[in-house]
Image 1 (spheres, one colour):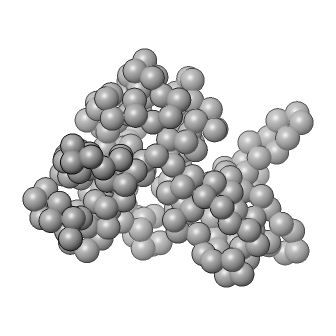
Image 2: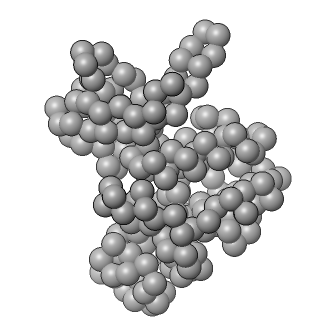
Length: 199
């Protein structure tokens, strides 16, 4: 089982990266939220890997942090109706922080905005994962310099929801609030996060 690949970026698209490690080029499927953090072509990059082996194929899915990889595994292993491709689509649409926050607060409407997720699947997500998505696990994020929503999901989600009411797409609103959190603090009030996000 491949757990992590560290190598040189040979090719990079929003949903796929080819990493060369020890003379072998590995084709790795990635969500857009990971593509934002992939190094430039020719530079070194490290991805946490989830491998899917079938009779006629072996597919690698890569993530910038262990937290993202582990959350992806929760999605596809614990919730019926969510396979590897839908899991990647969900993490392309929204960050792990926002998805955790939506599940923790039972926000079925927000979860339903993910591609391939209807109301019933969103409800299953909440039922199956609500007690498993503790938001305090920031250790892996801290070691890689990533920003994690704090143990207060409401502030992060409220800021994202406010931007969405202004017409921003969920993925764009999510990205702006994550940048605001990185400059301020995860516990900053919603109005300060919004001011920073819109500046």
